[in-house]
Image (cartoon, rainbow, N blue to C red; front, side, top):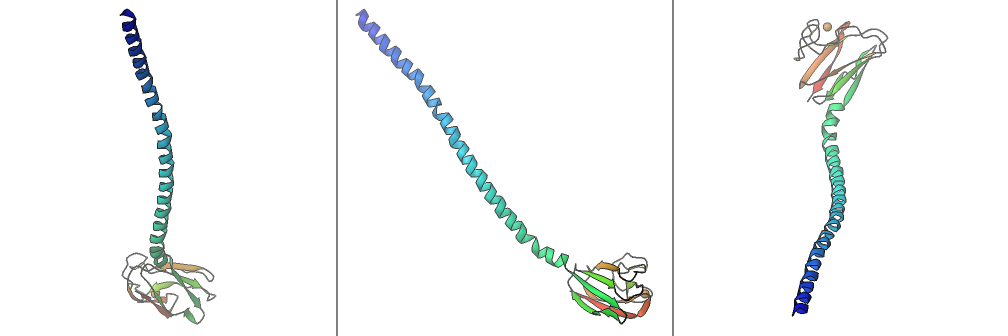
Length: 169
Ligand SMILES: [Cu+2]
């Protein structure tokens, strides 16, 4: 009887040992799961990269439309005969570069002369921001960005009979 009891105890002990050994096996798959998680992590990284790419594409898609109207500039050349072209059509936010190719100083400014109050944006030296406020030597340029919609006449303050119109829409 004692041998049977010992045998039972031994079997139970082996079973317990076996059960005791099982958890490590259960634990073992966990590290196995960890690599499994790492793989999804890599996949997520790739997904994020793709998302970033998509995001970049969206940004690029979004950026050009505003950049095009904002960054556009038109150059008007001031030659001995006057401003050329004398009438330009631009959009709100565009910049006009007044380039002096006349061989003498010029001074672009909004009409009327000499008050320079036609263009409504405040600033400058007499009441409107559309005013170079100084002589611009030949070969040099003066730029102005138009944020007001309308037809804005201007002239050369040094030679007020010369002028033109900036059409802003
Ligand atoms: Cu003037």
